Image 1 (cartoon, rainbow, N blue to C red):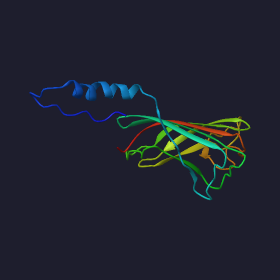
Image 2 (cartoon, helix red, strand yellow):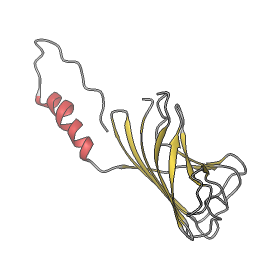
Image 3 (cartoon, rainbow, N blue to C red):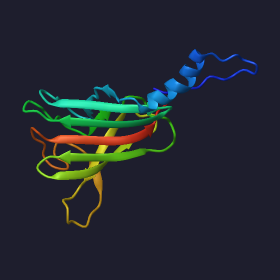
Image 4 (tube, rainbow, N blue to C red):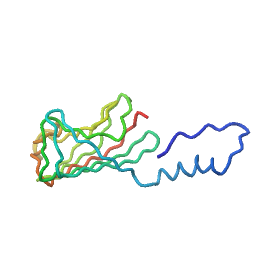
Length: 168
């Protein structure tokens, strides 16, 4: 993971170890494998439970820019709770006065395309999907819930991909 470069001092003798740390290691971290993390799936109502489903998160952090992907697959013992769904971020979002938007996909009975929204200072993200089925002349979107955009079942996948600025 990249870090803040040091401040160099006039007349400083630079060693190979310092050059490796400040230059080589910084570049290597930008080309290394993403870091895995386990996101938490929550809701604003009764808590959902993943049961025997799976949830995997991966991210790459370069400076304060975070690129992240979450993939969740419901299992046969998954319970969906109530309320609007949220997933935890690997790092708190910056208080930049703007919401960050990414992409959301639900692969259920149909394939749904939506958006991810991350609010300033947030520690989680929310998925929004179309309120009405395809072909209806209404483009509103609402939070993903147990029945929006469709009723969920075992084997459904939620895929979230987004880029945001972290607080630190």
